[in-house]
Length: 424
Image 1 (cartoon, rainbow, N blue to C red):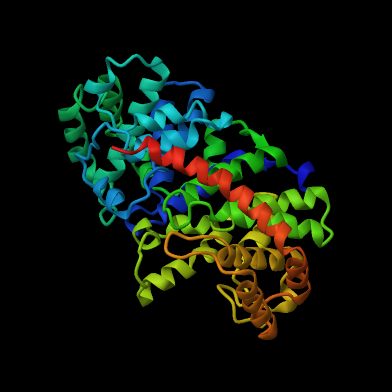
Image 2 (cartoon, one colour):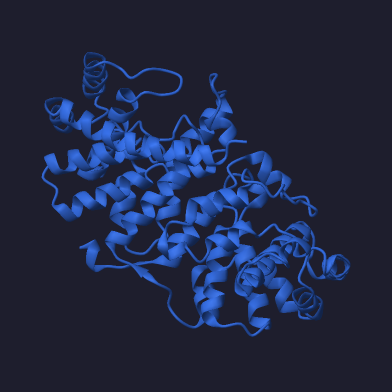
């Protein structure tokens, strides 16, 4: 049972980090490189393993609040410094992570990671936070300065010259000095352009990170469902609705309490791949063009690829990622057929459809019970979805709808509180 098989926390964080990088191909693996360069700086400074571990997590998640393709592109400008207001991605990342205990220490690092040293120096913050934010800041700017289309060692002199010039204004002088002292350490710069795997981080640290049991994975998945959905008012409560419907249906279909909890996690994560969809597309109120539609459809593929690298999450991944597959094999992205789709995957597919047609959206009202039945029956007739699960969903329509409405009401309240923080 999954409850007896812990999930490596760093596996989960690394996979989420890679998902956020997918928003812009120009930033592919940016978070991972920043984390690895930060680790290299911390090693050269002789910092503790615990410090380095927190630094890795912060590096992997430092841009988690960057929802807009426009803002991600702006960060490619070396002199980028957002206004120190509540509307920049650093603060959004802080808000999203600060109330989740395992990441409480990380949230302030993310909040301040674009502050220049001249602004950060006199703030009343723990010295460990100041040091961490500055290491992330300089590692982030190194990654921006490196031209990935050119050989890196030939760029080192120019990069060090820029960092020296900005020392004491943008960067803490002793960190800038450490970078300049690494000028002739070829391994440091070759590491800075590498694509480190999870084992590389572990080899560097020399010890295993925190493992998560099922309950904590549920809390982590719930937190990340907010990161997925709160990017757009069009999707703000969707994952919570799907989760409630999928968990309810799973119990009706005979799942154990443990399996139903796994279904809840799958529901929270089923649209994880939408982190690869720019918010400009999610927010679009008019019809999507062909390319935009293809980008949106790709989200299930990304969900699967993101989750497949997480140890012991195979079953949850198959339930989450196959929610647009159909029994006739004409779904996407893998075109799996009836015999290849588990009961859990079939439940998730119907939960996603049920939620989509029965919930209110900013651009339309929910469908009536009769309209919902007509759509579900038509999909059964065309061999798209499981008739037995549809029959159960129709028999329990009112109870399932109430469970969905309750879950979405709670999430809607959370979303409004979140949005109120960022009003000018």
